[in-house]
Length: 635
Image (cartoon, rainbow, N blue to C red):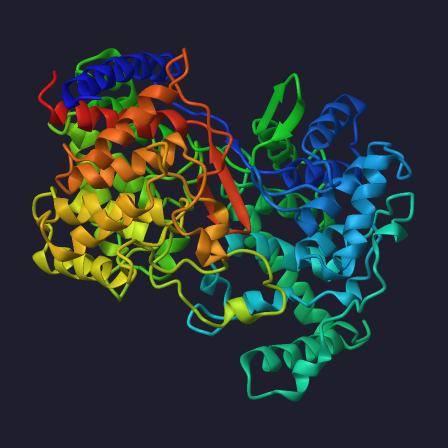
């Protein structure tokens, strides 16, 4: 296909995609598409309802239908499209279906139970799964790592204080300290012996002999904490300390409930906070509990396949990306859709100081969160992308918008970590100790700087007036230092090296790197080497745990767009790789103007928790096609 024909067809594809994207905007100005995760959200919703005594057939039946729909032929459940079976997800889905009335002797359930046993059984599931089973009376609390509420007394400078944890882990852990102190149980009403393999139920004690290692010392500490938990109630110092600790943790949780009734806008701290407060004496009709349960209903999606629960919602992120994409596509900033989106984004600025202020006590409020309501936890990635969107929309002269951008820039500058990079929610949140705790066996528990967030911040700051040159220099050097030997960058919040590279190259070029810089050429060479035979790019989530998957996977619209954004920034507008990538987007567009993308290309925790942002399949291709078409001089 000739270059002229590619540009012409790309322009036609871009118009259809823009029309479809515009059709998805809410009347209030925002965009929000489904944030798809896995069936543990739905299983835990049914487990929560059982624990609270509010199970309802009208909810259980469609939720169970959705869980059944996602079971694979081998009886397992995975955590992303095409994933291998996941032990904890399969256990939670199985138990939820038992609660829904499914017969364990039926072939799908029997296959699941057999797979669970052959893969280590409940004994080898993650700690969070065993906490749920303890809540259901199917696991002994004594056989779990101890997480005492007394941790609330540790000052912010002390190792292992709650602010050493990333914000998503912090909110979950504080609530769980209350739950694990009470050790409640609401039995399932049936045994699940078929899920046990007969293996050991406690932490391996062999590590206790290796007190020179961090892991060994923490195992020893866990044993001491178990002895502390067994102290009798008549031992007054422990009783008084525990009561004060529970009160402190309870107050911490209550103070952080958001306007929508949720905590942090994400599922884990919400469900554990509800259970924790109920254990502290809050009734189900208490305004705090009622608001939380009502807020969770806002995460529910219904369709002909059943009822499912989102882990989170992303309206600010989706809206910022949509504005950037439409602006790149040449949509006039005076268009009502852009104006209403900008007005909505400006109203969503976070006006208060949240937990981040513990590490930055003198920094003023500013920035944007990911969700509709999450004022305690604005994030740096969203803030950078919102400011890029507002600047691209050409409305910086507006008083409210300009002031919001200035506050956002100042807040972002103040959140730079000591090494020159940026994490997502906190500064210098990189304690090496917390991940070694026996309790922390799932997902990321700290928030150190990442290449993708740092790149988005650098891209934003590069065009902002008055940014100290030393900041730009340190951020630029951080990104160069983070480049992999093969020329790519790791993607913390998107899959994976394609995402990291797609973010880093445009940012470095915006900050002054020349396309002919050898390091940029290495990135281009890596992208060219990993282009699929069909012209697209894809990367499987297994690249997080298996290096042979780096840059390999089925072609997807979002990942193809990320690669194109890097190539275009590197001056590769007329290259064969760019033309073939654009052609892939044109050929694979649906009649509706979007792209099909069942693959998960978003990341919550690398490998452990994956996300399919349903707007990614549309907004990133619009961005890439817009830059390609406009780069060819087509209006």
